[in-house]
Length: 201
Picture 1 (tube, one colour):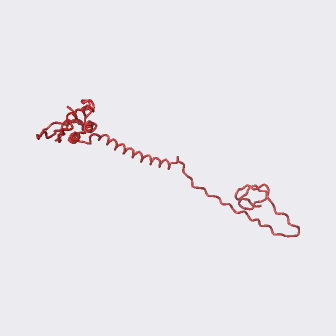
Picture 2: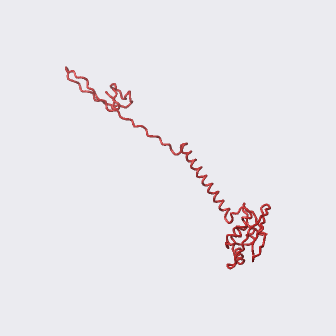
Picture 3: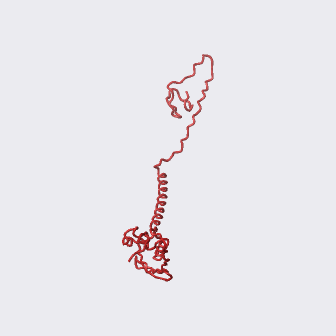
């Protein structure tokens, strides 16, 4: 008899193929006996075609494998760097709001330039916390400036001279022309969080 899976010849009575190990049917059909006196050549049983064994498909790595974790950490690191850079830019913009000046002279010129444009609300942000407390409120500050500089009155052009710095305080000599005459004054400043602000003494 022959194996039903691989076609290998199997001794009679064997339940499993010694070549491929396939289990054999319980009964096998044997060739019928030939009449006496006639010699027939033994029948040649054609073994069934050998089945192709499918190759295993590539193994996909689950998300929890070391390679997946490494890629995840790379992505998270890139996102973290982008967030940090964005935060630094935002903080720099917020700290620079109201005055981008980094020296007492620049802070003084920026303050008087805003007054020249009658941006009274903008000048409030250039005041130190001490000066804002002394004024009381932003509305008080704007009302005082509108009274000092009405619509029909131009603000004097003022330029800052050399500053004298003493720790977190500074004074700047200012020069302006009033009624054709040059007048000088002293501007006081206070450094808060690394930014020079207009102060009152």
